[in-house]
Length: 375
Image 1 (cartoon, rainbow, N blue to C red):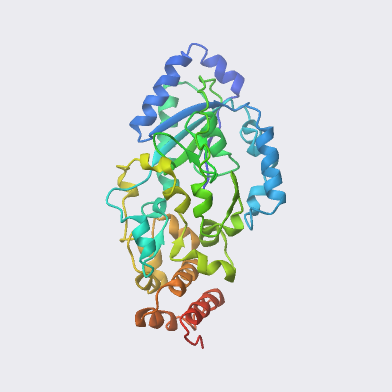
Image 2: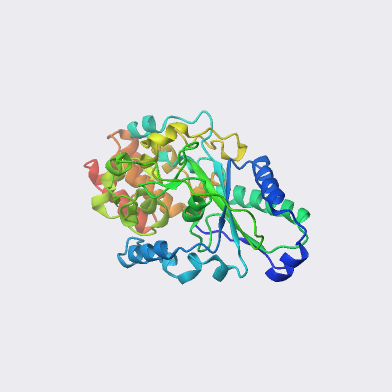
């Protein structure tokens, strides 16, 4: 998923610090944290952009060399800019990291949906509006508030975009620690929150990092349906259901299809089983409220949508990013894993001559799972 940061080019870092030499950095840091909470961010922390990330960078290179990133080739393109913010945005001194909870109230229980295999399970972060748009807008408002207080400063806003090690910076800013499933964990909020960043040349006060509190727990590793977490803190994306249903554009490997179950967009198992997510807070953001009944929709219903319905109903949703063809591919796999029924067979037969070869392939597989002819 890619979205573009907002670049504001003003004077050089040296000129800005000189022009703002009268600023009380203690007061400004405190005000930024207050403003962020007023804007709906539950967590905020600040880290030193000059922190040595060579160990993390080495680990990333090893991960890439093993091919664990699959077809996400963009992850190998950015070189040192990922671990050296000033090489991405010259003059960067600090990384402001924020978090925003996304669990909407009155969402159908995730485990119940997965047990009803004629239903479509959609990762809970994707039930409402696209978080990229929500966080980017709020981060820009935070930057605007800083600009009113500070005469001139350079910054760039990021929301899951560009070569940014967002989890590493959030960890160093004290928002949590990296769990064994590779996601950020917080004692106060679990892992069900979004992250965003502002790179800036303001020499703000930095926060302390937090110790790891996973202990000997391996629940996230043990529960992964495809065993994609190959060891603590290491994920083989090529086996990850989130990768397969969102990032991967081609055919889903047949041996993995039965393991996907009814997870048609993302997978939350490693988060749902995590003991720290008993602290996951409910979000009051209207933008993250469930749209189109996607927390409890049937596979057949979603599979019946035509292209226009897909585009209209999922306008503003992160799901629309994968496109209609990939959406049907995922649903076909879910239908192949569902308990046999006349409705499911009819839905699959109706698309066995689909214009897309990708859809036809997965529909054919699904029909064979129900001992139905695919031609």
